[in-house]
Length: 99
Image 1 (cartoon, rainbow, N blue to C red):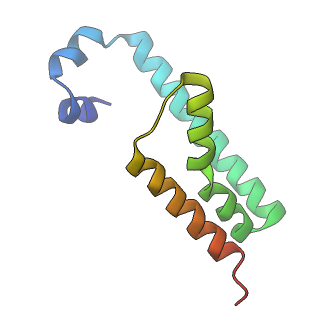
Image 2 (image 1 turned 90 degrees about the horizontal axis):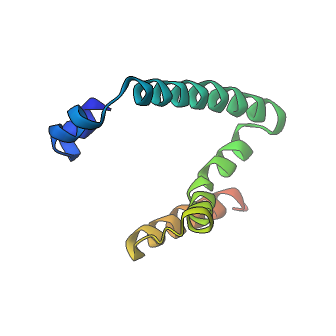
C-alpha cells in the first residue's frame, strides 16, 4: 500500500489520510480475499477440474465489468473493453477447440 502510494500519488496523501482503522480494514480484506479465494479455487478444481476452473477464472474481467457498471456506473475505456473482449474470446476459443 505504501509503495503503490509512493509510486502513484504524492506521499502527503499517505501521511495525511492513513489511519490505523484503514490499515486494519485493508489487512482484513486482504486476508479474507486470500483465504477464501484460494480455498474456493481449490474446491472448484477438485469438483470440476482445473481446465474448467481456469476458463471460469478467465472470465472474471467480464463479470467485474458488468458489476462495476451496475453498482458504480463505471464506464471503461475503449482499449480496456477491447482487451477484455480479447481475453474472453481467447478463453472461449481455447475451451471449445476441437483438437
